[in-house]
Image (tube, rainbow, N blue to C red; front, side, top):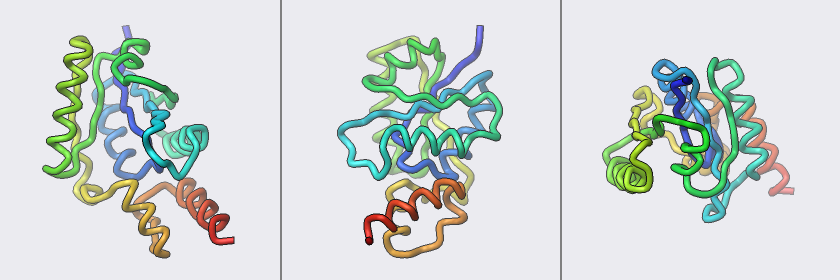
Length: 163
């Protein structure tokens, strides 16, 4: 039996902080599924397909990672995958309350799935997808925050918006 975890998120876009968490998770599990959520409640920069493609490109050199897309409750998808754990990243105390609430609700929905909180390297503690989008809109340099493939895709989106 494969010791599998799911790392769910919108990943709009995937950042170096996400990748740092993912690498840590692969040290703990035989396989980590990076589950790209089709969250219709969020206004995303990229389509679901593009987010999944960028996640695949950004994680292509990390062994034992599989990128998939899913819709609906993550605990249901985790059950489909036979995952034993859900990976969640914590950057700051402000994340903890929300993430704990999610973890407790997920535990109520499925007692078989445990949530594991991982903290990214200190250089990514402040990093978020929202900040990335703001930096690019204001013309900032993103090279230390996101993979090159993601930077190129974001620049292309904003180039089209400004034409």
